[in-house]
Amino acid sequence: MKTVLIENAYIAPVAGPEIPSGFVHIEGDKIVALGAGPAPAIPGATRIDGTGCLATPGLVNTHHHLYQWASQGLAQDATLFEWLVALYQVWAAMDAEVVKGAAGAGLGFLALSGCTTSSDHHYVFPKGRGDLFAAEIEAARELGIRFHPVRGSMDRGKSKGGLPPDVVVEKHEEILAESAKAVDTYHDASFSSKLRVAIGPCSPFSVSAELMVEAAELARAKGVRLHTHLAETLDEEEHLLEQVGMRPVDYMEKLGWLGPDVWFAHAIHLSDADIDVFAQTGTGSAHCPSSNGRLGAGIARVSEMLNRGAIVGLGVDGNASSELTTLSGEMRQAMLFQRARYGPTALTARQALEMATLGGAKNLGRDAELGTLEPGKLADIALWRTDGAFASAITDPVATLVFATAQPPLARLLVGGETIVENDELRTVSQDALGRAGGQAHRRLLRLAEEQGFTAAKEVHS
Ligand SMILES: [Zn+2]
Image (cartoon, rainbow, N blue to C red; front, side, top):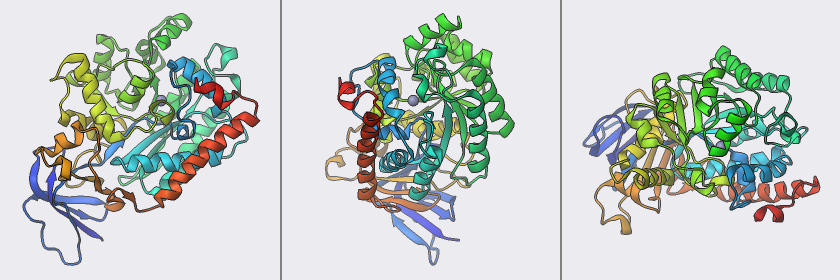
């Protein structure tokens, strides 16, 4: 078994006290020990010098739409519903090649911001465009990141009172069969798993009540998690009050969508009672502050949720609504949003780090394996260089990581003890090739969309 020793680092394990100068001992894909002082002498071990570096758990991203790498920069000043209506037509043209290029670039970009585990919520499956779910899984495998793709879906198009055009929705029976197939084909429930599948109808305004109920039954029968968008905007709340006479969280309760196996994206417009229900049921949320800011959706009540014991992780959300947002930067954005709303004690840098690591692991049901640096857990570790020329005027490494606009250099990123990033460069794949493929995916998607007669790209720029 391969032995790796990180030594001389400032260690912020998230669980337990911080270690100003210490080591992490890795055997195979797991942490076996960490502590203060020099690393043990182990013949044949790979030694990583962490002098001047901060070691944290790898960051966990709990909400994304990787395909949106290919549709960045469009509908820049729109509300969520306006943005969706503009972009559904573009997304209808995507194929497996677009998804592969977009997912590769999106995941590579995430890894460079310290992310070792990412979920992805893919919910647009236009007919005859290849195996889109397989394409993103392939991209994650090539990079070596831990991946939790969510088989999403929409079955309530415009003709049934939903928001999306009928061309991007699937039939109810097809969705359940494809969701079951995705789990059977790919889901790996093992401790060291790098691939776990969840089931996630898209949102209350694009999915029927029947599908929500049956998707929950299917996920529970198969022992996988449930994910969807909830309470992102007041438009959604109005839509639901009009269509089903209920607010979002009440509606989820009726559909059987609360519990420790569920995490929602956004959860911005919650009442006091909703927050208590989340805390009592163990329902998680993915806070995506940059996307929420970009779409003017609102500021989630994160510090109140944490104070009342609700689970909150972070998400960058799709690049079409967050653009080039780093996961490390979301810690800062989350902290600033809470302070702007509640004052300077609302969220500390260490709470932001905990949300980005342990909070995310809890959302994904992986807190036994991920989210902290502890013996027995998987060796998913980010090593941030905090002694750079301009960082030398600050002595708290965690503050350097969370308060600064500029991300500190990423000296190493380990997933299960394997190096994915070294000195800000991807090591498992060609960074240049990945970036180029992402740009090609963008151009290909816009060309396919125009060929199909959908809204031309130039029209959705405004
Ligand atoms: Zn989303």
